[in-house]
Image (cartoon, rainbow, N blue to C red; front, side, top):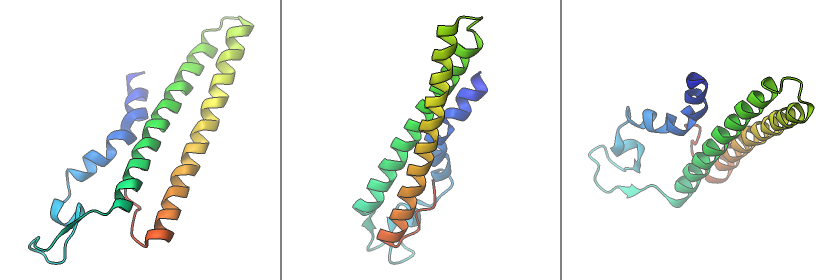
Amino acid sequence: MVVVLVLAFAPLFASHFALAQTNPLTDNFRCQDAGGLNCETTNVNDLIIRIIRILLGVAFAIAVLFLIIGGFYYMTARGNEEQSATGRQTVINALIGIVIIIMAYVLVNVIANLAFNNDTTGI
């Protein structure tokens, strides 16, 4: 159960682990020279995309949590039709939510690449 929860919340922290291995002068800023002089901060478009990705990660974690809860209800129904139906409907709704979240993530990346002409394929 703990492993499933860790895997469910991993997308939330993946960007923090990835940024630990990067150079802040070249990755968090758009610098004109290697020394870090004449740098401008990240533009608003990148900030909005990053916020949307974080919100999609939180939504994905919540959907996986509902998938686990629905599966628990379904497995522990013990012949109770009402609890079984509730668990089954929760699993179906969680799976629909996961599919919608994945499609939204892809859509955000495609729109960001087309509209802003920059590489936003990272996490």
